[in-house]
Length: 382
Picture (spheres, helix red, strand yellow):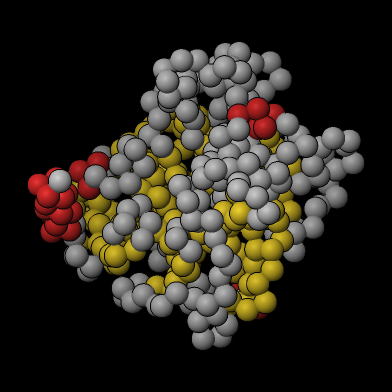
């Protein structure tokens, strides 16, 4: 027992020694040149998401156990912000995505997606908002604007990305809580993308408004566990990606009222190496095929389009984090078509949880671990 514990402590110590310290920059090869990676923060506990404030010098970031913090691009980190709701911090659950109101400079609303448990043993995704105080230390007047119903998760598949479109509507991605058939059930909010007004009301032009047996919040369905979402800056369309089972991670462009197949259509198999019981094939009539699919799952999380001028070779790229793949995936786009894929930072060997384009044109990543990091990426072109 003692020898096993000693080996574990030694292994952790080695990993800490090998991890780059805050402020330290390293270089990694790329098809387009050299990627320069600077560690801005270390010691984050399973960070999940970040959102830049209008001052262009600071950001909010979430840690899955339930902490919201303010960080600066100089590497400063605040104490946890007061007023964050209690979260269900078990398995994949906890404090997840963070997004700012489209009118944040005026209204100060901060939106949080998180796992919550109420009136029973199981949990589901909830979304709420609070006003960030002028000193950035508190969330005031926090209110829940959405709850996933019914609550079915024992700790997995919460989804939970938040995206505002150009009209100010809020999209929320929702996992199916590992209850596969619910993704096809329109009377349940598992395995869905939902669309709401900023205060949680349902838009009158949602596709299932007034349809008996369907939740009016639903925008699209047949999703498994979407942990990446972003608005395409050139078209204004929502893009998402979602975890497949063993194989079949996919990108989709969810359209109103469409069925994206899970679990009746999938390119993956079960973790037992057996077929998914409900699956009828990779392509099933009445469902939408994936926009892009990986035969071997990288376990994708986070998504960012690159349209900044700072690093011209990256323009018209889509960046996606890989958890199991321990890499940053760069997809080259021609219009909506994915024409090339490149894996970056594989020798960093880090689980990439989130990726965002910063207001300065750099990319910012969060790595998922007990000692998670905030990284800044630039490119030295060839």
